[in-house]
Amino acid sequence: MSNLFLVEISPTSSDRVTASVTVAAVQREVADAGAELIETQITADHGRIFAILEADSAATLVEALGNVQADEISEPAQVRLVGAELEAIKAARPEAGYLVE
Image (cartoon, rainbow, N blue to C red; front, side):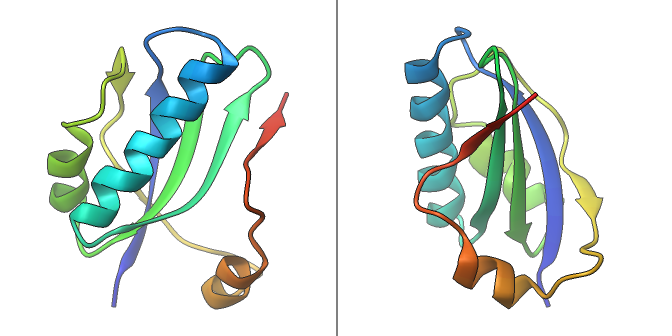
């Protein structure tokens, strides 16, 4: 059974394009490592990205995220889902992310 992890990412620049490029890189790198990007939330100023990832281990994510260009990427923190089923979230997720304030 895979685990869910939260990572906080500081992109190299606080703008919409850099945030989008960073999310795409995260998605690509974790997929190449056999993990999955479940959801991202980007702050209104584009200075922080919060990503929920599904992987077998934090070590898998650390290795994969090491290939992503960012000012800072936090260590993966294991989280659990409360009040929803992961498969329902995966089925309902939108094509694009959204901003939170």
